[in-house]
Length: 65
View 1 (tube, rainbow, N blue to C red):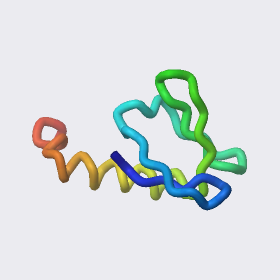
View 2 (view 1 turned 30 degrees about the vertical axis):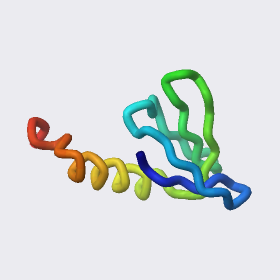
View 3 (view 1 turned 180 degrees about the vertical axis):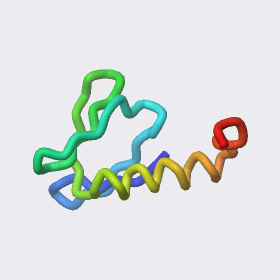
View 4 (view 1 turned 120 degrees about the horizontal axis):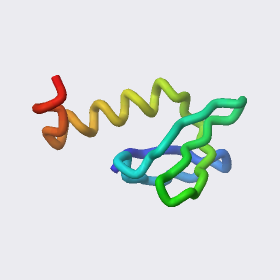
């Protein structure tokens, strides 16, 4: 799970494997595979880095490098 911050400041944890897309216009929105949209404070670059860090932590990159 990765940590994200909703616009109201509440911390939220999401499964990065369920993210379908990230858009920034101007708020950053994560669209989940379920169709749910989560608007967050972080930048797309921060989210991508958190996903990379998470996947390294669980060994998810061993077959992707």
